[in-house]
Amino acid sequence: MGTSDAGRAAVADTEPGGPAEPPRDDLRVDGPTTCLRYATPDDAERLFELGRDPAVTRFFSWGPYREISEPLAYIDALAGKRERGELLEFVVDHAADGVVGVTGLSELSRRDRRATIGSWFGHRFWGSGVNRESKALVAHLAFETLGMDRLTAWANTRNGRSQTALERVGFRREGILAGWHRHGEQVHDVVVFGMLRAGWERSALRSVPVRVGGTPPPLFVVA
Ligand SMILES: CC(C)(COP(=O)(O)OP(=O)(O)OC[C@H]1O[C@@H](n2cnc3c(N)ncnc32)[C@H](O)[C@@H]1OP(=O)(O)O)[C@@H](O)C(=O)NCCC(=O)NCCS
Image (tube, rainbow, N blue to C red; front, side, top):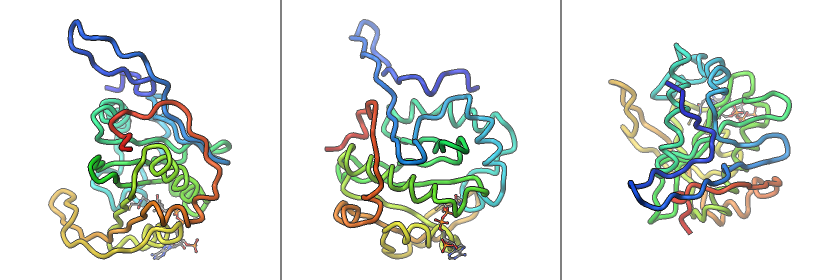
């Protein structure tokens, strides 16, 4: 596990005899103190260290990590999921602190030009500002580069910290979805938050300087 290089420019599988697709530059999003980049197997140890903390994964369907093979398997699967339009996740790499967490987009709807944003950070980086900056980077990527019209975010009804953090950066609380997530045998109610393009344009996130480099996975480009 973890032997494929998930950080390499992704090359689409081709039919035998079909045309080879030229390699693409990896997508990367840079802000004032952090960058979003694709995880590589070299990041597994750090993700293991951050994600083995039960406080971090308390509201997730996975974790806490118990073995290094778990983050390695996660990283190994990312390139395929990007190419299939299933998941576009990044490590959040801080200039001084190194990798501090993970963020990105899932639940893509190309027709409706929307996706779901999700994030987790190592406990010692909560309240440090990396969440806000990373939200600015993902929002810029989604609305400006990929052509999305809406970002959705879920927060467990008991995850007050996540709810406050989302509202603080401009997400609007839209309601509660009962029995929305299943984690093993447990069913959870979630608060749904949304940010529309117009809301992003008015939000403080818009004032964060962002630079996007490389080529997005084609299925995530919706407009
Ligand atoms: C959720 C998460 C991404 C937010 O990032 P963060 O850096 O902790 O968020 P911020 O510090 O910017 O904002 C959180 C705010 O909630 C407040 N808060 C803390 N506990 C709270 C609670 N129980 N109820 C309401 N607000 C709470 C904090 O005081 C803080 O406000 P402040 O800046 O006035 O102190 C981060 O905590 C995390 O990675 N958590 C674990 C994974 C997770 O739950 N991800 C979200 C899944 S939906």
